[in-house]
Length: 358
Image 1 (tube, rainbow, N blue to C red):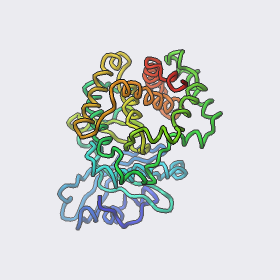
Image 2: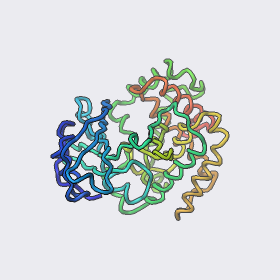
Image 3: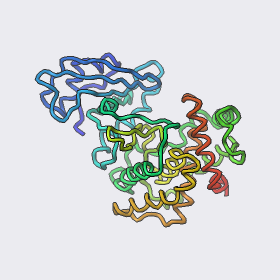
Image 4: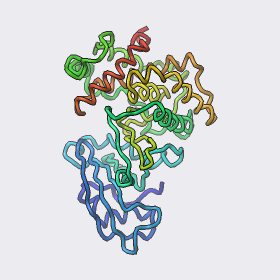
């Protein structure tokens, strides 16, 4: 993507001004002259997602939708966590277009070098008949096969790729929350989820916050030899069903790339299988879906892991997802409950915590 020279906006008001938008989109759409911006719905949590439409002197340029959406960290809470959005903006700016993974069509992405504030403008898929999913959205094995194929596209395009090996913003950071919160706070947060209404359907054999944190820490702090032995690629990092959208043709694609980083393929695949499907559907289809993913890797020139190794590995991805939803508190409780049930049951089915404690 052509990098804009206009400063990254500091406020939503600035971002939605015709002057800033014209300057921001000029590198990709030379001659564009935005004369009016019509604000639309705004979702304001940690990040701010604002839909809007543009009017241009001489008409909207060919190849640009007039219905757009901007994502940035403009509110008071977001300003303190602006660095969180930087990897996603880097991904859209520097990676997405080169590997062909199906995601939001981005028309601007940039990062403030001082504040690390990442801002992204994409086409508004809702205006095109698309929809965003959450943990309780119906999702079937055929759809999971499609998103696993997209994850395989991302993984294969970046598989041990030298140009991504030393990119700082792709550095592994799975243990960041343990560093920031500390182990005792992390355990207490997970325990509240497990012991409260959100955790009532988590199988008893894995409803242990201490054991989960110890297993996760063991997984994310491998020895140098273990790191060298694992093939790495660029991973989504948070590949649950709520980070999937359906476009206007109802084709599933991935979004929300804040946890993109170098890692092992199984983190995405195990987590995706455990979170997208009901327990019954996952149990019925997960072997076929894993074979499908491995076949997609092979079709794109990557020698996939052997079956027994791959089957064991997806349990690690399930533990990754279980940990992330164990520490989640600022999402609708019914979504947290559903995903803790699904992913926790997958962890129990695969005996994945035991594997990490061996």
